[in-house]
Structure formats: C-alpha cells, structure tokens
Image 1: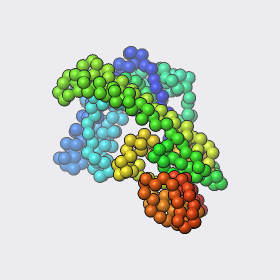
Image 2: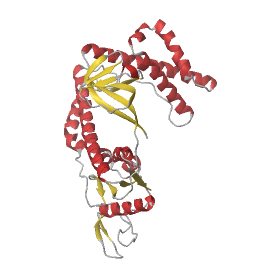
Image 3: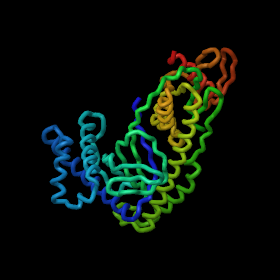
Image 4: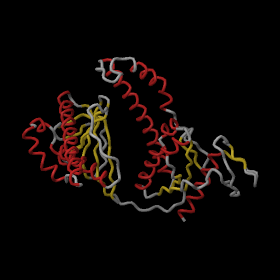
Amino acid sequence: MRIIRARRSRIYPTPAQAHRIDVTLGCCRYVYNHMLERSSKAYARRKQGMSYYDMQNLLPTMKTYLPWLKDADSQALKYACRQAHDAVMRFVSGKAQPPRFKSRKNPVQSYTTTNAISIRVSDGIVHLPILGEVRCNDSRRIGGRILRATVSRKNGRYYASIMYDIEKHVEPIEVHDVIGLDYKSDGLYMDSEGNAADMPKYFRRSQQKLCRLQKALSKRRGSKKGERPSGRFKALKTRIGQLQTHIADQRSDFLHKTSTAIAKRWDAVCVEDLDMKALSQFLKLGKATMDNGFGEFRTMLEYKLAERGKRLVRVGRFYPSTKTCSFCGNIQPMPLGVRVYTCPGCGAVLDRDYNAAVNIRAEGLRLIS
C-alpha cells in the first residue's frame, strides 16, 4: 500500500533565513502571475494555453532581464510554473473557475521546492534548499522517501510541511467491532454506544476577544478603502490572524486525538455522507457546523482507518436514520426542534441522535455484508 503523508511543523528561521524565504515567496508569486497571464492570453488567442515545458524553458530568459529571480530556489520557481499550468488546465477542462492572480496582501504565502535530495529532517532541525539548517519544533520523522517540502508564512510565523512517500504492507482486518456515528451540531457526534464527543466550542470561547479586536481594527487608519494602513492597523491585523490560527490549531488537535482513538478501538466506523457546506447554509447552523469541523474529522478517520486495514463506511445522505425507529423500523417525521424520538408503533423513547447513530450502524453493517 502506498501512502502519501505530510507532516507540518513550525520553523524558526534566523533573520537572514527569513529574508531568503520572503524573497523566494515574492519571486514565486511573480513567476506564477506572469505565467498565468501569458497562458491565459495564449488560450484566448488560439484556445490552447502554454504547456508546462514552455513555461519551464522561459525561466532562464526571464532570469537574464530579471536577475533578482536568481536569488530564489530554482525548483520552487519551476513548481510555480507547474501550479500556473495546472490552474489553467483545470479551468479548460471545466473542473474549476478561472484562475486568479496571487496577491502579496494575502496573509498566507507559500512556495514548494521539489529538490528532495537537499531536504533532510533530524532532531529539531530541518535542512531546506537555499536556507540550510532551520530550527523547528518537531523532531519526529515519518519515514519513507521525501517527495517535496512546502514553506509557508502565515501571520508572521513560518512553517515547513514535508511530504513523504511511504510503502506499507497493510493486511485487511476482519470486521468484528463496528460503531455508528451521527453528526451532532452541539458536540461533533453521538455514537451508537450512547457516547457524545462533547467537543469544546473553541470559536465561541474566543469569539468575544476576536470581536473586540475586530472592532478596534475597524477604527484604525487603513480600514477604509484607499487609506494607507497605519502601524497599529497592521499590528491588530496580525493579532487577529494569530488568534484565528490558534482556534484552528485547537480544533485540529482535538479532531486528531479523537479520530486516532476511534481508529485504534474499532474495526469499522459508519458515518453519514453529509454535505457539510450545504447543511450549514440550509439549516442556518453555519457557525456551529464550521466550528465542529465534522468534514475534516471524516477525512482523518478515513486515512487513519485505511492505514490500519480497517474501513470507513459511508451511509447515503438520504437514508432516513433520524426518522426510523431503531427497534421496530417505523418511520415518522422528525422536525429539527424535536430532540426525543417517541415511536408510536412500539412506544420506544430514545434520544434523537442516539437513535440515528444506531440506525447508521445497522445500515453500515448491511453495506459491509
């Protein structure tokens, strides 16, 4: 079994290394925008964009009249050409919207280098092309062959994501222990054993502080269009970005720990194949739905179970798990405001989410068999 796994860690570059990262970010952004513009014009003229090899062969010419491109990682510039080519091809094939230019005002900037020979990871140190040895906060190495590294800058902090290609022999496990998970807006999920995840609402915990910072930002010079941002405006914007990053890291940490515990305990996990984006818009539960991160949770479960030879079973989103009685199979309407399932057929009284989780487990077992 071939597994593509990436590990992201924060790095602490020296001022000179941070300058080299910023220079490479600017060069890759320029090359991407330039290649995207030329390819878009070529497509509009002859209905065929530039190929990746044409873009790659154009780089040496660009370096002759733009010598500052020589200060960046050459492999990162080539990868920027590949990204521009792929963006145009996705648009041409109808899989995506027209590509947009990258802005230097974007708080998240990144570049990818494919020079795998120069990428090494040791205890608390990661060796990257152009930069050399950079201190990081993660000394764990996944193992396998290193494919590439992505260096990013987000709200004044720097990160490095190393991608590995791992060959792993996985034996499928015979399914014995199966659990069903029903999405729970107030707490991530309810399982068929009657246990709720009780996920802390990280966004709501920090919402008051975030609102206070955003209100202060709106009063600083630079909040209106056309104004030149002041130093306090930039500082507040950085603080808001760091707080939002902290909330996302808290949520991701909880989801990783919870999904790992479930993947270790159960042979198969049954979940509903819900469209979380549509669910948040239709039921006016956007804040709670996005704060839970159930879609990301399902993705984590899927690859963690697969690495252990186990299964994630997706039950169809139109399966009436909430309306069906888990004892007698009677189906009745269940408005969202009704939180207790009372069956008129057999008289069973159950928690709404627990009843749905039991039905999801039963349907998952049917799909497995």
